[in-house]
Amino acid sequence: MNCHVVVIVVVGGRGGTESAIVVAEVVEIVVVTVVVVVVVVVVVVVVVVVVVVVVVVVVVVVVVVVVV
Image 1 (tube, rainbow, N blue to C red):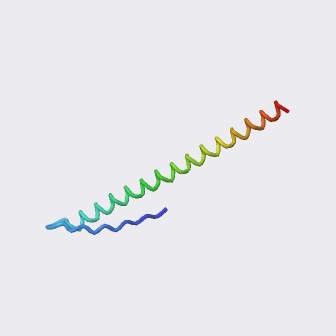
Image 2: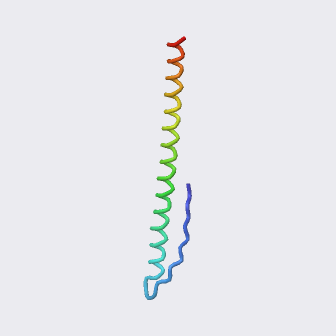
Image 3: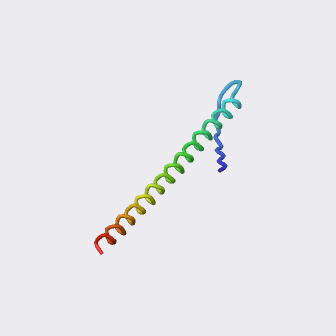
């Protein structure tokens, strides 16, 4: 996963370029972190849904077998 964020910051005086680079790096780190968190949450939700479906299917099969 390769995320590049371009941020243009105008800072007066010396160190303006360095400040812009630092801000861009911080924003990139935040964006990548948010993307990773969203992906992890989606994966966890999918896993939970799959587990719930499997449990429901197993319970239904057991009930059908016991009843029949």
